Image 1 (cartoon, rainbow, N blue to C red):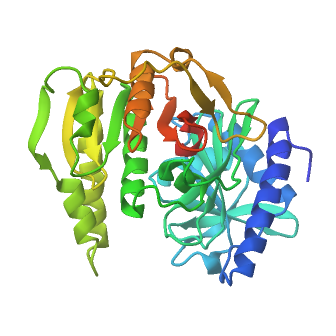
Image 2: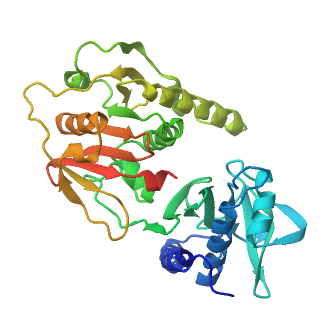
Length: 379
């Protein structure tokens, strides 16, 4: 293969290959079966390189937004197979992009006689499948298909031009890292129930998508202690709480109802997440019942003013630092840090208008608020 014209491709390919190799070994030791084939460094580099240059092209005025998966057709469920495979080159990817830009559709990539080609498209991928998603012009995300859950992916690396973020997936203690962060990293936690954690992740993605910024507070059900951190009456408090999300979780998709349930779930997620665009914080119980929105966070009576937080990002080479909360952003970040200190059994999520996303939670290990920057996990 000719050297990549995108220098970051080779760097990320080498690191991603090490990640996938380790995960594959771990899954085989746990008895994992039907795992996706492990692409070598050259294959990863070829996919990243072609996708990067395709992302900079325009097809009828639109930037390509596609997902490529390294998988043979026989491991792809019910694939759409082209009679004539496409070469893995930017022109071909950009041209076919409008047909496969919907979420959940992946172009299948394979190799024959030292040539890489696109054989078709699929919605079904085997566990640990290497996936490269084109999010925007010059913005790529390397992902892997989770082994346990259909349709779930773990981000491995983010490339934005010459900027590279390889995510750090080392397990962390559940008492120190919120379940939402551990779930995004692919580790286990019991901080909140699994269904609630999934809802938080979906809400975070939707909050970033509306682009207005916002805050979400997740508090223990059956307790009004959170109100002690709210200034004045909450203009948009709900009585009874809005329980659409909680009801959908309780019902589950049911046999033969997966698609209608998923549609209803996504609709409820977007409806609830949209409320975070209103000035103030949205309050959600850990049973996913909506309690209020537009709430003004203040300092709990008798509690000290938050003066410092631990700030970290799950990226290789990035160490946690202790900073004043005002250095993380504006009023939303400062009030979320205060809430995390005053309500130590709760979690505060803050989306910035520029796309940054931070999870604030009390760290029992370090007796301080820990601000986890996680937008690289949400792409």
